[in-house]
Image 1 (tube, rainbow, N blue to C red):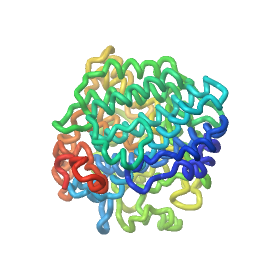
Image 2 (image 1 turned 180 degrees about the vertical axis):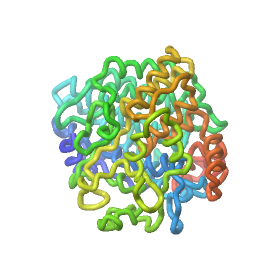
Image 3 (image 1 turned 120 degrees about the horizontal axis):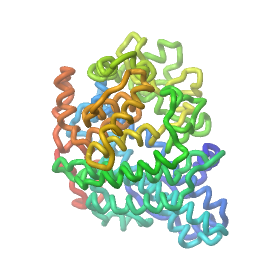
Image 4 (image 1 turned 120 degrees about the vertical axis):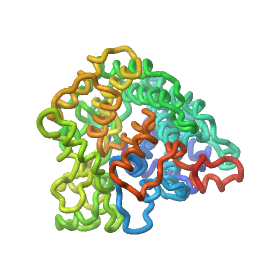
Length: 497
């Protein structure tokens, strides 16, 4: 899929166009559409291009997820964009990471809607009803994915399921979260029913029916979380049984399986392995990744004698793993040493330990934006542990089932077995297992721990630079640029200035 999708991004993006405004949904002109969609290959290019905005997902996961959590206590050497995210500032409406996440996901939705419209009006030129259905399912999977990102970041957002002109967009208010979820669920249900179970060869990396089921399970799990009194991703919907049933389909009937070695899951020479249910594809020189360098201090590269072009552009800023998390890796053991810690964290670097999970210096490309490594969005271990989470919330299953799942993970990590695993124990194990994968903040939010756990951590680690976490902060603000487009169309999320 790396060759098929990413080599074709540029011509498609020129055709469909990223937009100057954050939410500019101007459709492709009728002349361009008529000239472009003349055969199956045109549609294949268009569908491939609809995946393009996934390339922004790793940055969103790390800067807006990992940075927001109790995994990182960053130190700044100036006024940095990520400061307000890490510090829970109310004054972050113009921060680039927040603005770009809105823009990138809505651009993804625009591209998808444009292709879906073309499939409806000109799909007959493909010459295969089965391919029309598959392309539609891929696009609907992507639309659901982009909207799920938006709901988790901002809560209410505009609901747009067809291409719109800029004038039309400027009249569309934010829709209730429940309405956004209705579209997400419909799209993922369709995708799960109509996508292949797997792909091979250059099609590796496309969304499969199991990827759709896994993300839909996560949607139900997220919806089931508490509301915090904020119009955010949690609706207290109690859909744990729905989520669990979908996870069961992956656990019992899919081609995916539990990796025998933790480090091999993330190996540059073992991409698309049995753990990977869905990932974002990158390839050096074609579409290299930047995320391995994001949370790595520039001084580390200098210490290795490597050009600072591999840095993240943030000078002498550092991104240390928190004291509480470091201690957790050593105090959670029944026996042995946690193998995940030295793999995930740079422990021999003279400065503060940082996340090095995705660094293999021998595989570096031409710069810090050219790493040839995929970013895993959903892996089999996550599915297993979310299944355990559902059971602990009342879905079918037993305590023995929960313990077996957690101990499977712990055995691979070399830390011994536990009994009577609780939600707190499970969440702590998830923190150690998924460090650097951008899951921790969303885990805390859906389990109702975003306020209590974060404030407990601030106290335990004696952190004073981070503001007290309040319920309003479970979502981000609407970007200031969006508020200014049409006066009064959007109301800012509470707690932000």
